[in-house]
Length: 457
View 1: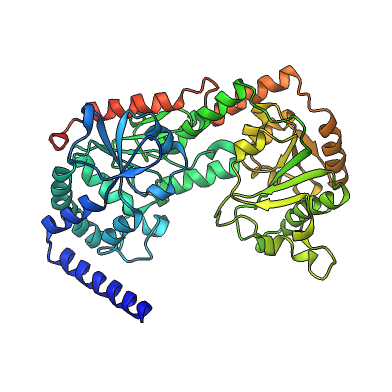
View 2 (view 1 turned 120 degrees about the vertical axis):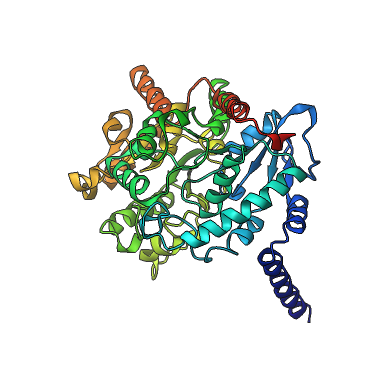
């Protein structure tokens, strides 16, 4: 009965919502949205926002908040801004009154800049709507800029473009980076930005690496003066911990961390499926052979193409091995990688920026560069291939095992290699001065001041 009533009430709400939007009841809608917007506090809590910020702080409204990594949290923690969050479902609910629900990311066949773009009428309708709606919303709650996390999100583009035209600058802090980490990724990123994405209509973009800037500027996605590379705020705390030498190595077991990898495609369709499985299964067998050593397989949470346990461990079906009963083997995606690195002895992985994070600590980092991938066809897909001299390279499973055992007893990395690792980290990720958050705060304030609008009053 309760479930039936819940379904009915949700259906009724959706029906009423559609009427409110279709009848252009802007005042009612702006009241509702001003009520559902939350203010993020520097200690991680949420409160109901007032109309204006206290102490003359600038106010940021973040869009698609769930898609951000921890960078926006670093900005919030400075307490330099009032940061508001519009719950994702309220933003999507509004946008998809105009666009079809399946139109979530831009791509070549749905690029608004193309002459045959099939949603031109939808775009005009939603922008006309947003001009009136946002004017009323921003008068109910003072907003100085909007910030979004991704260049492909449909729900953010029109909101950001209209806000910018109204004098409320849209700043993008892209969650994606490492475009220059391999020739293949660089080429595919250039193709996407040139052909699959509408040109940026916001005010500024802040990216991590100077190496990525060419993807944004050479494709015409954004003008060079509207993009800055300022590092990665979520690395500031990590860099500080490294400098303070906060390592947990006292009275603990030896630990090896393996970061699973795919190949940028459907795993089971990849011609490297057997190689990928072999590397993953190696760590299961290693855990069995060396019960005194802890093995942690740390995958990325909710990564669409991350190797699933069921696929990778399919070769174990029919065997007597029960993974859950291997006491020194942990397979989890919810562990904090930095915490993990600071209590680890050896790291192994491929095609992830986390290798640079482990390397800059001074940990032995082993790359399983097996015979299967030792050719030009795959080399162009390998991250940091030109810097393999900064890591330990295992040519096969036997060498991987011997390298792990050797490095568990001798973790020393020579000075020249460490200098190369630090330079690589700073090139691709962030400054070792740990000042990225400070730079982001200064740039956001600068963009707001340069685009000061009456909606802030």
